[in-house]
Image (tube, rainbow, N blue to C red; front, top):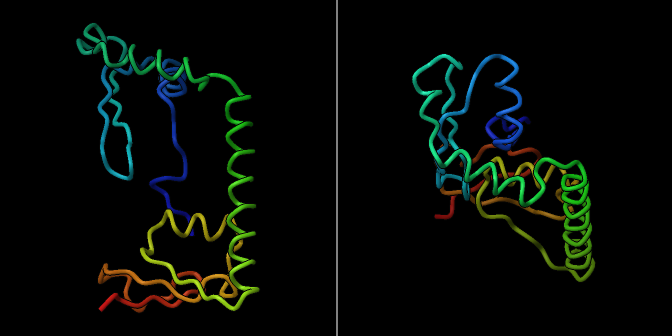
Length: 151
């Protein structure tokens, strides 16, 4: 499964570089609360009136991204290492629970949950089933996991 909405996350710095290659300018940004925080980018052609009135939010976000290193490869290498360590810790926990006869069920069959399941190679030995209140998810085979509603 490819959960297309979150297959890639682009920083403002990366988008500014990309769009500049095609004569375009990011003229505004807007934080969106969905999924724990996303960003909406407003882009126009370099000759557009919007390009002459770039929001101060663009420069503010750009400076924030540079301050945390989103323009440096080592930031992403460190991020990948942190994710690999979290995977290791999660799998140790799931293996320990399984070894002691405990059973684990999941709640909320989101695309983000599927990303974790696939990345960590979680199988039916680790996660017995999922519960989800969304009618479109109920009784649907999610990867190898049976889904049930919470009622």
